[in-house]
Every structure is written in structure tokens, then in C-alpha cells.
Image (cartoon, rainbow, N blue to C red; front, side, top):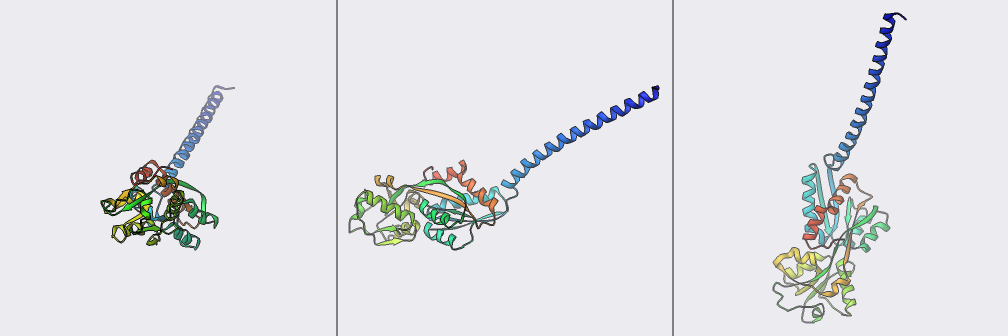
Length: 274
């Protein structure tokens, strides 16, 4: 082989090696870029890429906490808006199964959530995110000296309860039955906020509501704890709904509710950890 031929062969070998190296580098770069892109896309899907409205149907007792979390969600995800419909869990469940458009349902009891899951309107398995316990709401300063659940059976007291179909009403009935007490209220209210309002407006002397509602009312009412409430603690489940038009944002809102940040807001409002 001539000197020129040997030189040409070496040149071809170097060129081939260089090309192989470039291909290897390109593959690594492509792989790295893909990984980075995946991470970026994942991050974007959980933040930057979220947009549109998230409609949340939630138990009335969640109003203050969820309103706070809704604002936090909107700040964290510019371009999104969280709208709420608060009320009795039973009526909200009926609205969901009746076809009302919503993305997320947060109920004050597994029983009312079951209405939605049995109808096939939940996406996935609902998760319990908090618990809540009953408390007696009294007039400010507790002028009637209410000290126990039994005191509410005094016929001279005007007492209101939540409707028996509403989770707070069902829990109150459970506590009364556990205590073997019979109570005839002056009215049954459609949700816990309506029951509390009766006391705030001095249209009732006392109401059996949630600790969180007494907490939210501040000095508008007094609060009396009673041991029987331990027999009627409500679990609160939450789920994405099958009818959602904004799955990613709905899941992200639930993730916020269940996060350490969300749990902090809820426990500060008086909710118990799941």
C-alpha cells in the first residue's frame, strides 16, 4: 500500500470515529433534552399550563377554608379561576347526579359521596382529606349556661339542628342517640351555615354545628364542646367528577387541598386531620 493510500485510510478512520462520536453525543443530547422536556412538561402541566375554570361543589362547612385555598390556587396558576357552590352535601350530590356541570365534589360525609359514586359520576376513588367534629353554638357569652348536650333538651331553649339528611344533622342525631337523648328543635335547617345563622341572628338560643363553623363565626357565637361528639365525627371525601371539562386543573386543586399547605389552612380552621 502506498503512503498516500495509507494516509487516506487513516483519514477515513478518523472521520468515521468522529461521526460515531458525534452521533453518540447527539443521542445523549437528545436523551437529555427528552428528559428535560418531560420534566418541563410535567412541571408545566402542574402549573404554567393550567388554565380555565375549576368548578367545585363543596359542603357548606368548607366555605371559609376552600375560599382561601381557591385564591391560593389562582395565584399559583395564573390564568385559572376557581368557582364554588357551597351547600348541604345531600343537595349538592343530587345536583351532580342530576347533571349539573362541576369538576370537583367535596362532601361532608361518605354517605353523601356514595350518592355520587353509586351513580357513576365520580372519576377514580374519593379520598378523605379532613374530618370534622360537632360543637354547640350558643348566643355570645352563653347566657343560658348551656354546658352539655342534655341541656339542649330544656323546653325553654330554642334549639336548631341541621336537617337529618345533611351530614351535620345526621351526626347530631347519632350523638343524641348515643346519649339516649331526645331533642325537638324549633327548626331543621338545610345546611350547617343556615343553622349557625339562626343563632347569630338571635333567632335561636343554640344550634348543633361543626367546630369549624363556631371557629369561623368568631365572637358572633359562643362554643360548647360535648363528649358525645366523639361518637359522631365526620370524614370528608373529595373527588374529581366524570363530567369535568378541566381534568388537570381539577386534579391540581385536589392536590392543593391534600398538600401540607392545604392541610395547614384546614387545620387552622378547626378541621381534624384524616
